[in-house]
Length: 195
Image 1: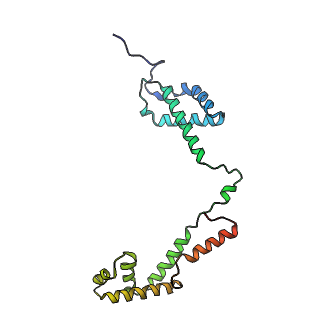
Image 2: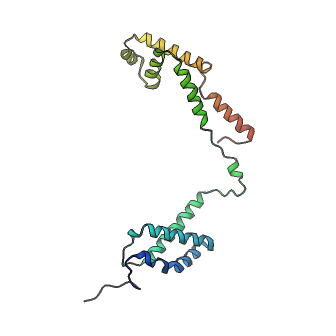
């Protein structure tokens, strides 16, 4: 009867105890991949952290060094893939050309809208909520409100006109039109290109 092949070295109860024994080999492997001692040390550190936190995935009795080398290799190639998508910008030229539309424009417009909406009569708010916000047809809104379809259409027109008037909008003007134009004006003065 033949005995099963035993791994080299003593089998420890917890594979974490053997991790320090593999540091020199891991470092040499990392240096051969990165060609940079500092990056290699970071890669070894990441490898040890990943191995430590995923030690339950290691099968005791198998080659711990091979498992660690696999983690290191996978970490190295993950970093390389990520770096391919990054843009080198040491002088900040690329970053200076980027912008993001301010989030406060929408909040300010919503605050103005809420104030104006609160000034509408209850009938006008009701019809705008049913038709504008919930998307019901005039016929469906008329049935819910218990009025004629013509009354719903009339109230909707008057409610929209009054809301536009309270917001200071011209006919057909968008609520965010001024904010968007203001944002674009600031960006054009700063020399920033629109995306």
